[in-house]
Amino acid sequence: MVELEKKISGDWIELKETANDYYSLLEFLKLSPPRLAEAAARLRLSVEQGIIEYKRTCLSPVLVALETARYKSLAVEEMRTQETSLMIILFTVLVQRLLAAELLPLSKRSEEKKSFGVEQMHVNVILADINSRIKGNPALRANSAIKNILMQVQLYNRENHKMRELLPTIKPEMQTSFLANFTRTFDDIIGSIRRNYLFLLQADAAAERARQEGFSLALMPLKELVPFLTNQARELARMRSTIGYAREDKYKTREVLVRLYESRHDILRLVEDEVKLYRRMCQVARQYDLDGCALVAANGFRDEIIAILEKQARRKEKA
Image (cartoon, rainbow, N blue to C red; front, side, top):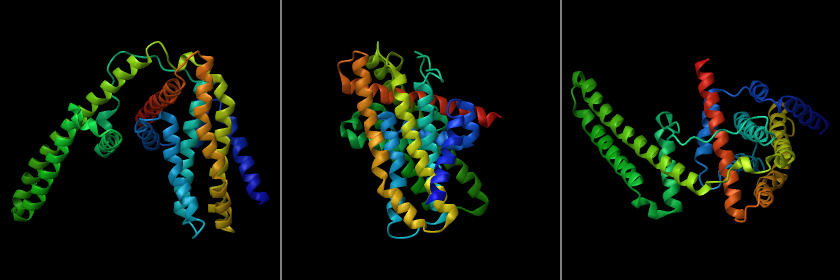
C-alpha cells in the first residue's frame, strides 16, 4: 500500500502548512457556513463532558460505517460523508490546538446574558438537548423552563393533529387562510419553546460561572496540550486520507477500510487520554478537585470553539 502511505503523508504535510494560522486553515479545508454552524450545534449538545463528549459522539458514526465495511462494500457517497465528518472533527481539534498554543486568543468572559444563537437554532436541536437532559436526570421535568417546553410540544402535537384532521374538510378557496392561522399558532409555540430554552441556557451559564469563579482555561498550562492535540489531528487526518484513498482508488476498498477499522483503538485512546492530560494540567494549576477541573477544561474548550465557529459562520454568510 505504498500509494496509500504517500497520500497520508502528502495530505498531512499540506495540512500542517496551514495548521498554525486559523484563516489559512479555514481556506484550506473550505468549510461552508452550514458546516460550521452544524459543528457548533453539535458542540452545544455536548453538555456532560464538553469537547471530549463531542469527539466521541462525532467519531461514533464514522466507526460504525467502517465496521460495516467488514461485511459489505461502502457506497462512494457513504465514504464521502465519513470523510466530511472527519474533516469537521479534524478542524475542531486544530482550532483547539490553536487556542492551546495561544495562536488564537481565549474569549473574554462577559457577564451579560447571551442569546446562544437560540433564534437560529432548529427546534429539533432544542428538543434533542431537552430529552437528553431528562434522560440523564428525570427530576428535570420539574424545572419550570423544561416543563413549559414540554407543554408547548404537547400543544404543537395537538394543533398539528387538528390541522391534518380538518384540512380535507376545508374548501379549496379557504385553505390558504386556514393554513395561515395554524402557521401563526405554530410560530407562537416555537417562539415560546425558544424563549424557555434561552432562559434554561442562561441559567446554566450563570450556574457555570458561579461554579468556575476564580478558575478558567486561562489559568491552565494549555501549551502542554499542543503536542498531544497535534497527534490527535494527525490520526484523524490519517483516517480521512485513508477513506479518501479508498473512495478514489476503488481497488481493494474493503481491505483498506477494514484495516482502518481495526486500528480504531489509536484514535479512541487519544480521545480518552485527553481527560488524563487535563487532570495532570489541573495538578500543575494547583486544583485539587481534579475531576471537576478536568470538566472545566473540557467545557471551556467547547465554549471557546462554539464562539469561534458561530462567529465565522455569521461572517461567511454576510460575505
